[in-house]
Length: 455
Image (cartoon, rainbow, N blue to C red; front, side, top):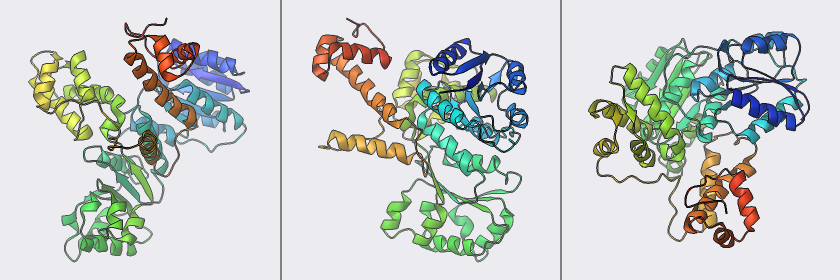
């Protein structure tokens, strides 16, 4: 890489890590914990790239983007933030940040994005628009790759003149995604209408909906449950649209493609609704977001008047391992119930067990291998699901190394456990050199326990 990077973050460790990594890559780096200092450097003409945190002691990094764009048009800004919500991703996109990454970020991934930004440093970008304030505390929280990919897709389609189909299991937050698309779009001051099957009955049903929407947003809730007659009414409603037509969104936990093949969903409606498809992942497919969601729901319940509570380590482990068939909705309801039923300030494992009932906790899995299925086929299913979560887009660059790391880490951890931490036996089991195993343990940051000792 070649160029000067301005780093603004109030965390000294992050400033140090980024400075060292960028310097080793060949860049010059100026790092600060102050937005005022950052703006002074920008105004002085310093820097070919800015990497900035959002929440700073003297301001907000996203709110500074319009000023940076006005002073230095075309200067790319990568936003990094510990506020892992859909609002942050949307605000960064609206303010025309070059890129956005949640904390904790993957350093190699950030370096690749920085390299791309520096290679385009002479590109002139349009003036950034001032970001809008969050209009609602939406519980769309998550730092996992699946959720961050979803946030980016929402930001890209927010004002696109295309229908959006939002798919996912019950309780994953499909309606919240639909609401976010409307509330952050240019139509946010116009009506937002959720339509269920009963609303389409009657001669004037579809026409009255269009009249009520007045150019706003219409959401067909669980459109997969609509019978063929109602599907036909929706198609005919599309045919009546004028220049002031409403934005059409639809949610479905049903597999519409499967229903289409079975002849239970109209072909013309399927393709009209599926301009862009957003797949909301199940909670078991983003288990690392469970602690973050739990903290969010504990804080929200406390703001709503519930007594202050926290989860014990054992209780957190049970909640993290539970299967959550009802997804995020079930998790929120469970946390709210625990806030009122817990006897003390700390929620115990026994209290969590009492609320969850006799259903055993399970280690979450992204999919269940079928009997006799080859390992390669099982891996292929997981990879296909990961690609599907990005809708019409592609996963972030660096996929090859990222997938290898995701596979190597559990393989080595399980092999170490199976050999009681004996690295010589583990290396023999894996069929690799012992020094290679040591290097991988270090590179993959595999934790050393009493059963796993560097020997």
